[in-house]
Length: 285
Length: 348
Picture 1 (cartoon, rainbow over the protein chains, first blue to last red):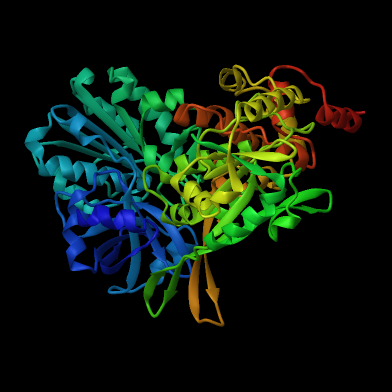
Picture 2: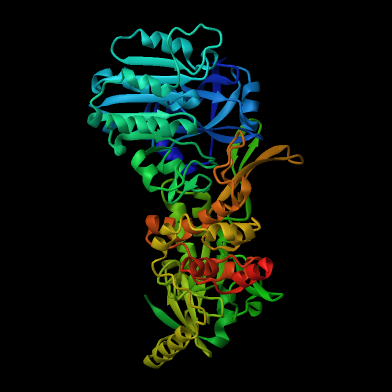
């Protein structure tokens, strides 16, 4: 395969890409659609990754950092990212106009074990920016709807203003082949039509066959403990509870060592870990 | 593996003949220590013990440009230097083997591999000093990872040939080498016995993975974290430390941008800090613990052996005596040695 050959040649070499479209999701989070320029690489790259994998995005002279892919390989052609303005690189990225060149490397990471999830009920819990990798898996599951059992998607945001992909999820909520529940912690303007409260309150709607469920959580660190407890209360086995983690990474290939936890390199052994891993490897969460 | 004999008088002649493989590098005395330097074979110190910086500097340079960016295009950049590196002790070669395993797995690192291929590695036997403990890490003997290995038996060397490249190096000056006799082998066995008996330092590494795992919450780490200066010396001199950082540096003269790879250290504060300022390992004790758990447990799970080769560089280099000896002893509940003496003075 072209892609594999390229990786062997020099995995540090970034691939030229272009920002096709961008728009703000909230005040500080922007959605980017990025297309690899080399026409021979567009399809191999955008159709072969796994939900939950990440790309190293770089701007020369500024730096390189890992970002979750928020698009799904079942809709190839573009890479989509959902990026919060938080550091040096992202600040520069927010200054770029559409059609600007950025550089991509990857995809890297283990991604979600989609093959293991086939035939199971899926339960997603996303909080804040945690929606980025989960949207990839959710869209993948919806595009291959008949491969999975029931699908429950729970999404929490601080306020209606902070909710990412608002319109997209409002539209998805209309679909009758999966259950989508959205909540906000507080609604100062009184405009939110759905639940108000913490995301764990939405578990009252969940009706899954717990032992045959893959439960996935991604969100701010404080959320994990509460959500994982809810999963365990439902009876989901700890090797079917998946979470994706964030670490500093410079290479993405298990070399630079900056993401190491115990004997695991988050960039190659992760970023998706099961609760079993988290219990047995100290320092993951 | 074939073994041949080289007269000590022919040693310089032999090394000079290797210059056609590349630059000649070997251990040379510098102050009280040794360094790998480019020199004539007459200047190499056959009695050299550990160098300040290990031989990893040849394969993963302290700082190297991996990519260059000019006119909106990235270009691969690598300076491969052909070298003959003489005087690597068994611990060093074991460390290079760990490096090789690490850098050739998953995504093979082209920069490392090309450098490794370009070098001819000539090992040299050594007599341990009071800071060597390779007998405890089982790295005092080496079977692979070198092209040639020389054992110094006083008036002669026994030369082990470890690769086809090594064989070629010898064939070119074949007349300098003789067949090994039974008498030579007896001399060797005698030398081995003397060498094995000359270890003064014994670090009890047995059971370390388990002990480190169970000592995760131990207060020992806090005591050491308190003393640690986060200077990173231990990681720079460690022959099995592989971590690096990548930075973009603009070169004003050449009007181009260099993407540089630099040695980096897990004991630095910024090591686990992500954008936005969250630090996964804020405390020094956390970072120190990471270093020792990765060496003694993490590597074990991945490669079946600890990532310590017993060279003693951390024992020589750490300014506050936090080293493998102090840590292993402390975890085994023995609070003796320089570090604890220092702490007593401090607390008195």
